[in-house]
Length: 239
Image (cartoon, rainbow, N blue to C red; front, side, top):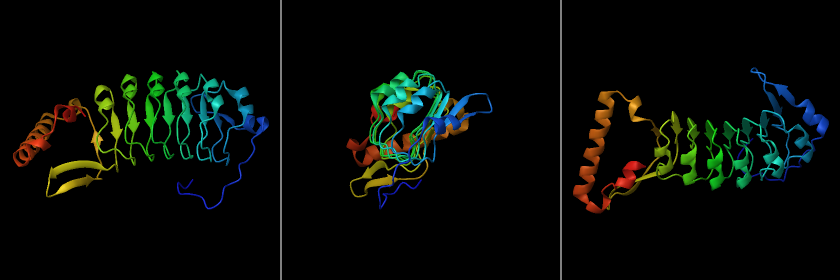
């Protein structure tokens, strides 16, 4: 679904219980998946609460502007896919989905996330790419099972500090964010839009780790000589 604005308000389709039941399939590992993607729906029909015992729920590529209120009834779902809608916020009730392992909110219009997202203690993969986020709630640091987080194509100007406390992260995708580095008053701010990945130091070989540390020290020394006010702070290092 295209992310641009529509010239006309699309008419939402109606989903009956029978249609929803026919949309339940079995995954290759035997999980029950309710797939309501590509249904052109702007709101989720209440009838699907009768199917709240499914393991996975796919509501992607629709016209929804709000996460449905009945979603917190799906307390057993492991996978929730809401990508490519028009969502502007995530409700606090998301924290009730205690068994959730995969949450896909990519390609929406999110500017913030609720603190309650930190209650998803079993979350393994979180995709937030293609939104309008410039910060993450500090509670993200409580997601000790998180291994993959997608943050590409947002409005981050620095790496969120809460990620430094997630020691078991395998991959952080921060592609195409407007990271800002100040070199000097004459140069002003330089926008960095190249790919940026955060990896654990333990993944780097000794030579690569040493090279990174030397380059960082060289950059900090150069900045300090030009303007002490631009010296990287301890907080920046932790980010």
